[in-house]
Amino acid sequence: MKKEKIVVLSGAGMSAESGISTFRDANGLWEQHDIMEVASIEGWRKNPGLVLNFYNQRRQQLKTVQPNVAHHALVELEQKYKVHIVTQNVDDLHERAGSSSIIHLHGELRKVRSSVHENLVYHWEDDLNFGDLCEKGTQLRPHIVWFGEMVPKITEGARLVGECDHLIIIGTSMQVYPAAGLVDYAPGHAPIYYVDPKPSLDTRHYPEVKIIAEKASTGVRKLVDQLLA
Image (tube, rainbow, N blue to C red; front, side, top):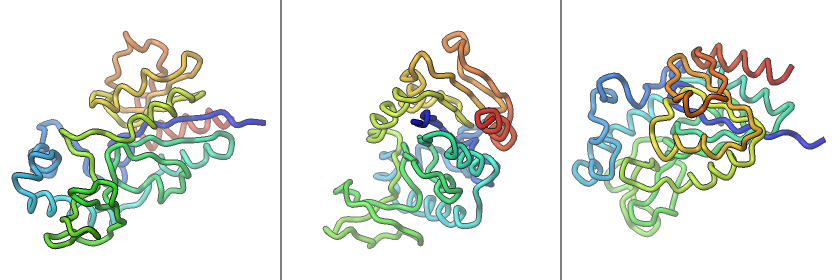
C-alpha cells in the first residue's frame, strides 16, 4: 500500500531545546549582534571578518549539541508515512536524528560555498578564514541564505507541500517570507498541525489548522503518537 506523505515545516523552536540559539529574540539581536550585521549580504560586504567569526562560533556550538526528543519523534513517522522535512534551520540535527529526506531552505552551517560561483559547495567542519578559497580561487563564505538573497530551494519546498497528505508546522512564527508562504500550497484535503508554545499563525485565515500550543519536545511527541495510532 502506498504511504501517505507528511511534510514537516520546522523552525528555530525545533532546535531550541537542544540548546541552539534562536535566530530572533525579543530585542532583535542574535548573540548580541544586530541580525543585519551577520545575516545579510550587506553585512558580509561591510565586515566579512565579523560574519566569518560569527558563523565559526555557530559551527563550533553545533558540535556541542544533540538532537532532542522532537527530532527523534519525527523519524518514527517514517515507519508509516513518507516524510519530507523542509526546515528553516541551518543545523544538522534532523540529519543526525535519522530523518531521511531534508531540505534546508536557509542553507547549512556545516557547508561553505564560493562567494562567486554559488554552485561550488563544500562540507566544512572547522573555522572558515580569509584565504580559504574554492577550486576556482575565490573566497569561501558560509553556505547560508542571508537577508537580501534568493531562497533557491523554496520552489522544491512548495512542490512538496502541494503534494502532501498531512502538513506539520513546528517551532516557527510563520512570519518570515518566503518560508511563511509555504502553508498556502497545502492541498485542501490535508490536515495542518501547528506545534508552537506561542502560535502566531492567523487562524482567521487558516481556521482548519489544529493548534498544539506546546514546546516541540512534548507537542511533537503527542502528535506523532496520534498519527501512528
